[in-house]
Image (cartoon, rainbow over all chains, first blue to last red; front, side, top):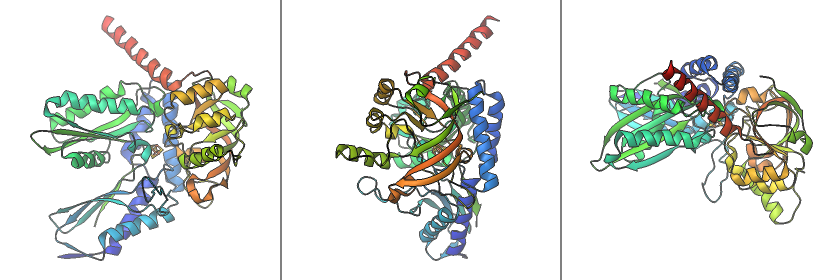
Length: 280
Length: 195
Ligand code: SF4
């Protein structure tokens, strides 16, 4: 049994949130820079240039890439041979509190969705998806997510007969309907299969899989490329003002599902697809 | 791109010449407001009370800035999605609000009010918040301090980079921009098939 202190988790959370919020991933930055040259619309190219410049300023000045520093969403894999000394969720929330305060990040969480809507003041509570896995390590992935793009996400419970065509149509329609709202170019995370909630969590996880990565299953990988092409033919373009760069990636995850169903969740993420991970 | 320099406040005359697709650099004063502040403004109007800011010929920027770190006038401050303000916006446009800065689609009711009263909808690039913050020289809270980032701030901006998304005649870059791209793409396909 390996011992890990709650304070180690807290410190890792602080570090990861600050890194994710202020430094865009090299995969996204490279894709944006490629877009500046390849974009056929001059106005669209100018939008991408401003985005790239903004990333550079954020990195140099250690300030947030986007003012919407999101809700702090965590994917955690806890090795079953680990013993945590202290409260796990408390440590994560304490890390969120410290990072959002010391990093000058915006506090964007309200206590109650319908009646009070009072800001909790420290961006807690975090959203935590934890799994028990073999081993004696803890892997923490943070994906702070703004709501401009979160609000454009969709889920649908398809019957199996809908098949690949039904899934493709739904993904493309979701991006088309979102139009300029989620700050394109976007990363499209798709979760197919599982149950209602599993599909949605998978879709969110896929937004952090990286630009240029592919599903290991060649059929799904081909579908990712096909959908990316179709989405970029919509012409929505950077900031939605027209152009060839609407999405940087379509990342699909899948898992077993019920004989009667084919859930499809589409989690749209803006170009500021922030994520950072560490293993303790 | 050649951007037009525009001084605020935005009179009806200045607004009229702006066309969808124009790149502009805005200089002057803008007020910030998001959903929560809009809700309070409209409640005041419903109660027949005066607004804390005179909106005539003014521009509202839909933004909830991040806190300013030392050495900065304001934290990162890019636009938020505008449709959330749609239910409140026509009332403010009727009172003379001349411009809005945001991102994303607007309702037909907002566009109709803009056409009737000569208002303009500007877009700033979503997610370019660190860059945009550089053109905000000064920030102070006007009211609703309890809303934190969502309070109404008075920003002094200089050469703030924006695009005219929807002009006072209803010209809409969100329609013409993507349509032009698709036409160009179809044209190319046709050429390729012929050649
Ligand atoms: S959708 Fe993303 S880039 Fe756009 S404002 Fe929200 S967090 Fe920022």
